[in-house]
Image (cartoon, rainbow, N blue to C red; front, side, top):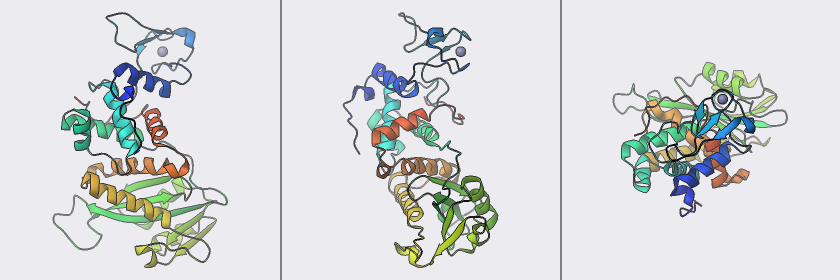
Length: 309
Ligand SMILES: [Zn+2]
């Protein structure tokens, strides 16, 4: 993890605010209420009784700061701690637990828990452009993780586990979905809504993909059994290594850092791991750039959690 923790953005609210403004407003502030970005029609308010960073829009007369309309809005957690959380969660490969954030940031465990979920919300993928494309491949696979709430006690087999389906572009993004049932209908729905049909589909030999595979430019499979353990590339270059690699990172991180999670929150953790994977260092995105992308992505998210304290 390459974070310079002595950076003022992690200790000083003015520096943190300037950091957020530089990322969210590269062309200068814009009004989150009416969308006005005419700099001559936006005024920064100053004065002792004014909240720091407050702006007024001369189009709609509303006031705003850099956090309005983002997951940070109305939070009582100091901005520099938000900035630290964004950077910590984006720099650590396996994530950062609420306990770690609680200790590192000196906030209550409960606040840290909300904070982490808000940052996860910011890391949720909003990109709806189709994955893959002509001449490109997409790997699809499913995995089973933890026990769903229907499982009263440990049972053998996959039926009572949470099911996750993921699509991976070998040189790019991942999208992972918690699904109720890993069946042909679900898998097809995910594939046709997320993947470009001109792509080549790579999967294992699971019958889940046989039908939908026909809707793609080509469907190539790798032998099941081989890819349980390690790496296998079919004679035509087809592989599911990348998607298995993603599942491996996810499961190791969940086990090591988060000690598993409830079914209710599984999609949020998938979003977090997917975000780091889709913006990984292997694709030329460094830790600071990844955190900045998450901060950019913090706007326009549905706020489904109570505000942190
Ligand atoms: Zn406005």
